[in-house]
Image (cartoon, rainbow, N blue to C red; front, side, top):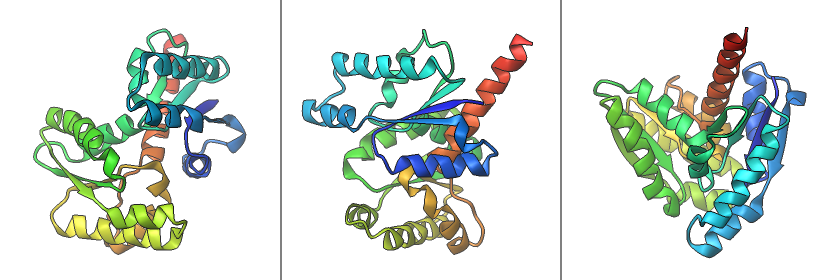
Length: 225
């Protein structure tokens, strides 16, 4: 199974490789492309312009030419996935896979607590998770954790993961059915967060996206045969 990834943060390579290993996908089956320039261009423009969408689409089609599935790990670039109707392989939006998984876990009256570190991502996550939650008759609470963002940006990763674990524990204590990590780079805190929450496992986009990619590849393979 060959899976390609489009990242805009170089550190997310390791996050998705670790998740892939856990799910039984060999590291040599993964291909990573990091395009920091695309996210920075969106930031400069203040919006995901048609030209930038076209550049992203071209990059994804190039990746698709040598993969069985492609995963977009950056939420900023994620909206282009809806336009990938001509891709020869499944293209998975990591944050949407996470929102769908969280909604399934909280369906019929549950509550999803979404830990979001970056203030700029609050509204987009609210909209994304609310869309999936409404279909599952669940509710969503976006939990802003600025202390996590501060420690992440300063490179204090142990303090960052401890802050994520504490926020996860608080969210469960406040009645959340499931806790979801809004940013892929939060994934390494999952084990620590689970321990702090008496074994209740938070969800992250790396594992959620890989599961969806693997399911779609297997489904297509079964359809062919």
